[in-house]
Image 1 (tube, rainbow, N blue to C red):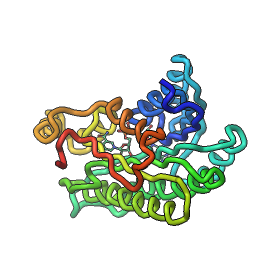
Image 2 (cartoon, protein in one colour):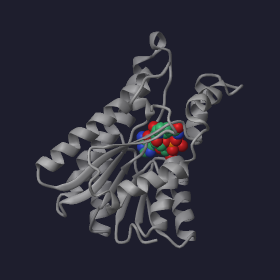
Image 3 (cartoon, protein in one colour):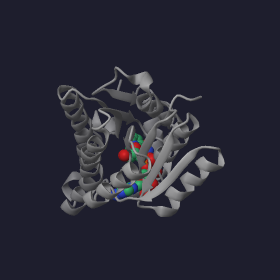
Length: 254
Ligand SMILES: NC(=O)c1ccc[n+]([C@@H]2O[C@H](COP(=O)([O-])OP(=O)(O)OC[C@H]3O[C@@H](n4cnc5c(N)ncnc54)[C@H](O)[C@@H]3O)[C@@H](O)[C@H]2O)c1
């Protein structure tokens, strides 16, 4: 207990799945969580789960693709909490198509959330952390940021971008003399609604995708197992982890 005492944490896409589990886990360790999402009901439910468990949290509406919303979220946090210690850029979507049928519009829509959302988060996160000169930014990539997969040309593009944007930002923060650390997390298939989104998109009523993943990663991961890794990167225990990749995939990309 207390591994996150006195830390203010912003979690994007905290309305369900990994974002919710990470919010709950960090709150259990003493962090104050700003849960954001464009799904207000989900985000508020995460806050209620945290506060009913004795933790501290509040919700802000936030679409990560809109720069003006990043500006108002950060202004709100600096006015009310006075500091931002940790930013978890978690909000993400998956859109899968065969390459030859991939609509450009879908490719761009996915880039807007998964790439531009993380870019804007790092830009405004660094601005908010600059006064203190320290902090931890955690970007959700994926095994899809490390290796390819069929119908994944768009999603892999976004998660590969997140992986290298993380490293570039980490080097820049060090070169600027700050103690702002930037790391990425790379889960294999995790049992959240995103896994169901994939099944729905590939018409996988018989769950052949699950069987294929189970062959390479033993079983589907649970959101709590990713939350524990995020907790490590968010806490001061990871003080020498910077520009690194935390791969949580039960051997999938080993
Ligand atoms: N589930 C997996 O198998 C898996 C594996 C590797 C990486 N990831 C990554 O982890 C992150 C979380 O995934 P998850 O499985 O919890 O997904 P999820 O679909 O269960 O939850 C995603 C959350 O992000 C929110 N969101 C989506 N677009 C948004 C936007 N524009 N602005 C604000 N909020 C938005 C949704 O409302 C939702 O609450 C994503 O970045 C995903 O790519 C997931």
